[in-house]
Length: 67
Image (cartoon, rainbow, N blue to C red; front, top):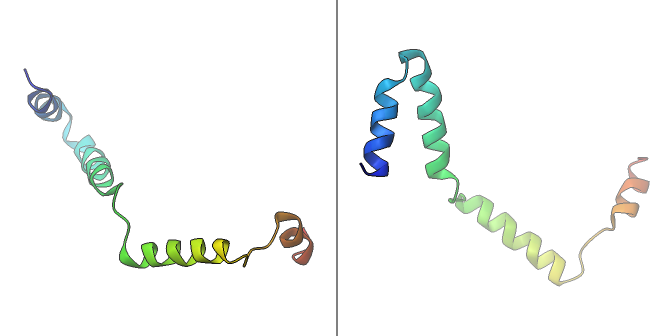
């Protein structure tokens, strides 16, 4: 039996009320490696800030926010 066949068998054996949980999990699993174009732009902007020294130390961040 292949892994795909085993997964189908397990899904078929689940109670109806658990199928929504499985569906949510599978959707998240399939989307976990994809970032939106907006997120990719934000990551690049952050990396550019780091490369160009536009950063704040954690101590300075805490001090300016009274933490």
